[in-house]
Structures are given as C-alpha cells and as structure tokens.
Amino acid sequence: METTETSNTRHCKRRGFWALLILPVLLAGGIWATLAHADDGFGFGPGGFGGGSPEQHKAFMEKRLDKMLDHLKATDSQKTAIKAIFERMAAEMRPVHDQHSRLHDQIVTALSADTVDRVAIEELRKQIPQMVDQASQIFSKALLDASQVLTPEQRQTLVKFMQDHHGRRHHFM
Image (cartoon, helix red, strand yellow):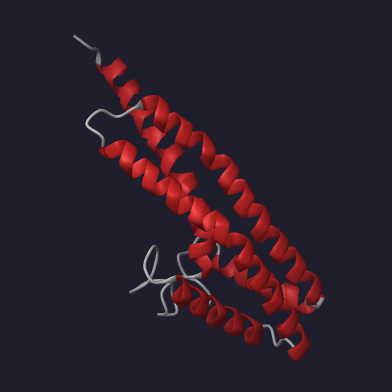
C-alpha cells in the first residue's frame, strides 16, 4: 500500500510536469495573443485567446496600437515609425505562432493516443523553452526599437500605464 506522502509527492510532480508543459506553450502564444485579443477592448469575447482569424488578430493589434499611440500623444512620424516596427514584429512572430500551433497539435495527438508516450511528450516539452525565448527576443526587440522613437515623457506615460495595470487581465483600451 502506498503512503499518503508518496501519493502526494507523485501528485505534485505530475502537476509540476503539466505546469512546465502548458505554461510555456501559453506564454509563447501569449505574446501574439496579448496583442491580438478579441475586439471588445479588454481582450475577452469572440475571437479572444485562440479565436479569430489572423486577419482579425492583426486588425485588433493595429487598433490597440493606435489607441496606445493616441494615449501617448505620438506625432505622425512617431506613429509611422512605431507601426513599421510592429509590422516587422508581426511578420517575425508569424513563424513562431505557426510553430506554437504545430506543437499544440502534436501535444494533443500525443495525449490522445491509447498509450501516452512519455519520451515523445518529453521531446515536445524540450521545444518549448526555445520557442518562448525566440518569441520573447522578437517582442523585446520591437519594444526596444519603439522605445527609441518615443520621448522620455512618452516612455514615462507608458511605464505608468504598465505599472497601473501590472498583474491584471486588463489590456489597453
């Protein structure tokens, strides 16, 4: 008979495994999805996380970016430069988003099998950190490039907004 301690330890290890597997996959898609939520102004509703076409996601991202630039009182030249940066980011992020979709499908297939292949799941898990790192690098580069276009005052306005909304599910307008 198994002791409660051993059973609890095994349960915690399993929960940790799923957290390691699911959270980074969500984070990888999250960079794209954060910019591409449903068009309800708060990131919820039809087309939110995982819903909507790429065209809908892009349109919503552009709308959110326009609102942020208006909030920062960006000049026309700043708007043009930052929109170009985020267009480039979206193009660079597309292969990562596609990779995330393929990995998701592979995980679903592996978990749907009559017998779950632990080695196959582990191989899929090993892909997650590289995918998250790649998406993070693309996103960070775009943010740093955009920060060079903004004035110190505009960056402070942006930082204040980020601090006010840190940890919340609310997104800019």
